[in-house]
Image (cartoon, rainbow over all chains, first blue to last red):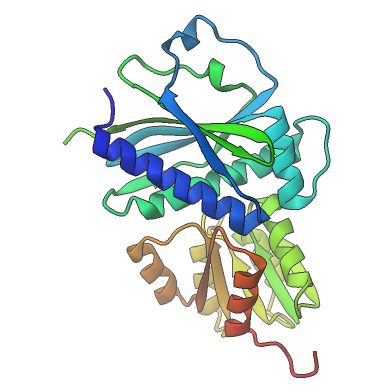
Amino acid sequence: MALCIDTETTVVDAISASMIDVFSMMVGEEVVATAQHPLASSAFSNATHENALTIVMGFSGDLVGSLCLCLPEKAALRWAELLIEHQSTEIDQVVVDAASELANIIVGGVKRRLSDYQVTMSLPSAIRAGESSLVFASNILPIQVGYRFCNCDLSIVVALVRAPA
Amino acid sequence: MKVLLVDDSGVMRKIIARGLNSLWIDQVVEAADGVEALAAFGDGEGFDLVLTDWNMPNMNGLELVQAIRGAGHRLPIMMVTTETEKTQVLKAIQAGVNDYLVKPFDQEMLQLKLERVLPKPQSV
């Protein structure tokens, strides 16, 4: 089951607008969208461990599912450095907390922009895994949206469906 | 001037405290939830402002505001949150919140909001 094209466009536009806001206001940096495509359905058989971090935020209400912020190590470390001047060579608890806060604020901005939908967000959950390790139930058709900031790539996986009427 | 800063995110507390310390705030007392905040607040002596997140474990920001106002304290309270849904905002105002700082925010917005609830002392 996929979001209808209008809803998908609305959600992705809300994500991109929120990303731009967060990066410009919190750390004074530009972020640009790089790509958008369905998440590879072969993820289940090709799941690999990556030195990366994924923050999952659940949605309930009119839209059900999750948004997953996928940060390769470089992006996670850079974000923590920009946000709170935390210098680290590996993903530690502070980096996880900074990434969780990034996801929280992005999704908060998405929720504000989806004013036609009644949605509730969960608290963020952090997973030490990359986007290729994400798998979803077969009735979900996730979309992956790529972004770049400060020569670092990250992506957001949108795995949402309209709640049954 | 002394501020009570309440947020379960250590990252957000660091960001906001850094912002406050670069303005006219002399002391920032931090707490990770409403229960810790009330313990730190005590009888409110010396505090000029409370900055609180909404969603926190043990006691959330709304409950904290209700507790502070229920005890008769009239100092300004500002909510720092991503929550802007109308019914939630109304709840906060009814509880006694003076203003909102919506995430994301930059230093300029923090200063603007601070000026509205806790103007810079003339001597600074």
